Amino acid sequence: MQPQKRYFIHTFGCQMNVNDTNRMGEALAGMSYAPTPTADNADLIILNTCSIREKAEDKMLSALGRYRQVKLQRGALIGVGGCVAQQEKKKILEKVPYVDFVFGPDAIGKLPDIVSRIETEKVRVVETAWVDSENYVFPQADPKTSVGRTTEFVTVMKGCDNVCSFCVVPHTRGREVSRPFTDVLQEVARLTTVGVREVTLVGQNVNSYRGGISFAQLLLRTAQVPNVERVRFTTSHPHDLSDELIEAFRVEPKIMPHFHLPVQSGSNEVLVKMKRDYTVAAYMERLNKLRAARPGIAVTTDIIVGFPGETDEDFEKTYQLCADVRFDGQFAFVYSPRPKTVAGLKEVEWGPVPHEVKVKRLERLNALQRQCSLEVMAPLVGQTVEVLVEGHSRTREDRRFGRTPHNRVVNFDGDAPIGSLVEVQVEAASQSALSGRQLKTLSLPNVVIPEVAPVAESCVVG
Ligand code: 5AD
Ligand code: SF4
Image (cartoon, rainbow, N blue to C red):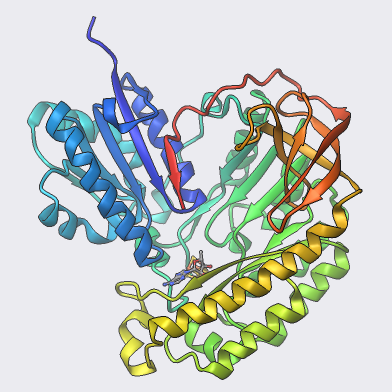
């Protein structure tokens, strides 16, 4: 019998990519490839790439350089998938002669064909065609991939029809396609058979979901699937945040009290150039309505600093917005020009912001956020929080790790099995995590969850 071949997938970027990696693993399992946790003994290495910012692209190029050795030593096949592959296929093939294949996000199902063509015909393969919206079929997740996990991501849509001027996603992921709601609910139900109790519905812009019911209804229906205890989602665009969705937060306690609502800038002038389609006042109106519907809800955001033409005054408006809102968490990024985007093409005309200025602005915002996060976390010391146990703490094997309904990370002393809902007494807090000890167990998962690493996800780099 031929020894089984091994694959290693290096995942960059967002949750959509992590999900795509899982689907790649499932496609490869069908052709007798098994996962390996390191590239060194792999027969097939795939880089699942991200191009949202220049840094992500640079990281993928330097990783490719490292994997060249494995190619030389073992003759491993090397493939590049994901967003960079979709946009830069020509450049990759020309610049990196040891890449055997390049495939876009719509070609994951073709992975077995691609690999066997290379193995038999010894050719380089490129598969980056879009599948038309009407013909696109979302790959169904295999629940086996989720064994060991009590929280899982479920794809509800792909692509994006917005045209935010800084964003490469519409160019790499194409037009919005929603997954039929019956398929989503079936996948959620199947995941619960391996002990999944928390699902996060994911898409680039979930609020414009059109898979047969509204997104709010999809959340409510997901919450009713037996054995689902917690429902989350990401990511939302403020201009699609409907009253119906806000109402869902008021009526359904299984929808967790956390909302990621990217504001991007606190200046209306910048928001117009970003083509975000809302004003600061409109953003605040939605946010306040949400906070009224679910008091205490955690709100997190994304911000870009140094967008072309952003003045000191514009930035001060962003800083003031953050100081007023006091977000629970914030991902702030230095603007990075992306190919084919309007802002990328107009950067010189609108006025590039010098790198040092961008970095200073980022540091100020991050310092403010550290203060805001600590303000939220510190008062939790001495309180009891509910935690869904996800596994061992990353820093200490003998401790457990999980999250609160507000999505706050908790490391704690205790022995509750993965998938348990427990009460934890908080004893210490930092800006990013809580620490404590387990009190009583509130409920156990419907099946025993083994303590194993998930199979397909080899490595995730932000
Ligand atoms: N430069 C910097 N940040 C960006 N983002 C998207 N495109 C860019 C870019 N060109 C950020 C936005 C988005 C998050 C996922 O990444 O804040 O919400
Ligand atoms: Fe990009 Fe805007 Fe679509 Fe989000 S909504 S993926 S930022 S184009």
